[in-house]
Amino acid sequence: DIHMTQSPSSVSASVGDRVTITCRASQDISTWLVWYQQKPGGAPKLLIYAASSLQSWVPSRFSGSGSGTDFSLTINSLQPEDFATYYCQQADSFPLTFGGGTKVEIK
Amino acid sequence: EVQLVESGGGLVQPGRSLRLSCTTSGFTFRDYGVAWVRQAPGKGLEWVAFLRSKAFGGTTEYAASVKGRFTLSRDDSKSIAYLQMNSLKTEDTAVYYCARVTGYSLHYWGQGTLVTVSS
Image (cartoon, rainbow over all chains, first blue to last red; front, top):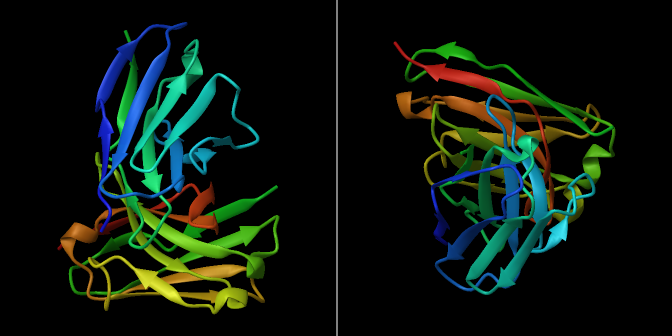
């Protein structure tokens, strides 16, 4: 199974800050990497697929990068609605596996 | 508008069965794979099962933790996917989400249904 390691597990930031979350796969997954956002009490929503392609509803302050085993999600100029938990998921092979999540909290 | 609505959750005793439904609308259901993902209280996301569209063979994949106990099926005429869960264990307690799949990315999710396994 491909193990996904996210860091940090939580981050405190202020509105307007730049936040970067990293995700490492235990083996090469090319660009088969997806990012989701989950707000408390809500379902996850897909943010970025294929490592760097933004879903249509996602603001351009979000960006994804990486390939192989190392990936990152960057939020430029953090907005109040961005405080949430973010998960990465490898979309390379079964079993599909998720990172442990990164909670972005208000400082 | 793409919509997925889960139903069928509830309280069930260990060892019993439950069937979840994922009712969809707003897209051509038969053209897409469907997956189930669960989230135990206060925990992260865990993929459970995946069912390919008939165009891709209609085959299934299961997490090791549920293989042999859970069965995912689909009724393309009704645009519904079903997750039959047998021999339930306390560790199956979670919110269960269904999702529309493109590639192996989960592009659209339902709101989830809570399954509580307890005596």
